[in-house]
Length: 256
Image (cartoon, rainbow, N blue to C red; front, side, top):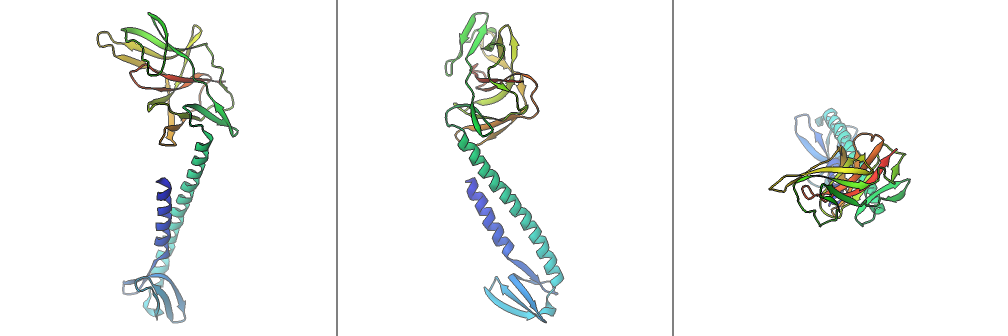
């Protein structure tokens, strides 16, 4: 659909640019495709009558005609440039999409090579103990506080060459995605704090989220995500979650 829109705009702009107004000194005009001044006569192609015609040059306001034609050409050239840039951007986006597998997960493209992130094993830790988080298997809602954690104080996936890395997330579920900073503590990294209210058993999840840009590349759920500012050294993760379900899927990494 997007490609059709660009093609349509290109054709419409071409048709629009092909015609111009040949002004008369009395303020009227003829819509023409082109015209030529030959001595004291003007020959022009009438768009209305689809034929070549001529008239005395003295009747035409060539100054106004040429000024408007120049302004029209400048506007058309600018529009054509924008269309070319958008077309090129769409080509580059298609190249990006072809590099990323259709399997759910997080990926990077580094020096034209695909980097695949391993989904981390996550646990929910409360005063009742630790339980492994599994997609579509929500934890029992028991009032109190807890944390979603990843084992180890450091990720094995290290990013050294880029403080503002770009990631691709192929979604497994139509959920929310985020980039979060993790807190290392006691041999684990904390992804988020969870507080479950008594009686109603409604969870509140708190994360140290990083401001990001996101761009949806396909309708099937491929997203590009990258931080708005340089990342400081530390532990981070791309997460996918449904708010209030305590079900975060985590792909961790470290900035050095």
